[in-house]
Length: 281
Image 1 (tube, rainbow, N blue to C red):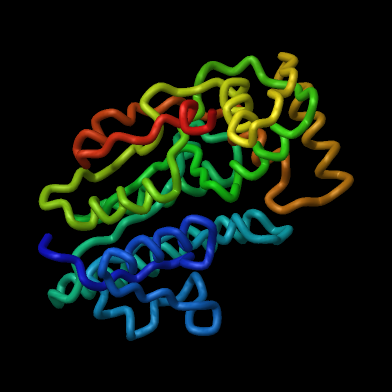
Image 2: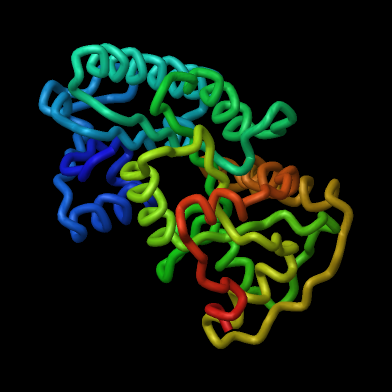
């Protein structure tokens, strides 16, 4: 594609969306970020977004508070289908270039939590020309955010239970993710799917210790325990505090992660990620 001037970003006010919009704006692009009074998932984007060269779709109902998880997953699926239909109609009119769907490392046919299953189902919709899937690993920033924020809280504890899972955590700085999305939008021959994150996966213990070092804290004592015990503990916290998304949902997502091959995607974009462990030290 030529120079991208205008982006429309759904979920622009979330953790990742905030950084993506800021990066694009600081690099000379116009960003259209409809708020909740202008647009809701399940509806076409406002007419003002018809001028966008690229759609970056981050909005996700499952990340919000709510008890009916099936209905939320259904909204994510049908809402994305609605956006894709609108996008394809505009492409036929020559008004739009690219649609970038932000999926997840947890997406896959064997996904064990609602979020991963939902993202995998939606990926099946993203099949057209210039419709691109992006699977980020663990997205982090200097101010926490999302799952990384939960890991930061764990890293402050003196002792934590850790799973005996293989290395499967692949961090990527949220600013690097924003840069990658801009490069995907501009690429003359983009791939259909990008896996983005550290090329050498980390274990849960390595990740938590690196996060502790970031704050000059003493690393917690990590005690390996069976996954079933960790899941039971997460379920107990959910019963007491009722967080949304649930702790068990997040635990299941982390435990079931499968390492991604990220090297080819990063090479295609001409990117080398910052060293998570070195940066955190």
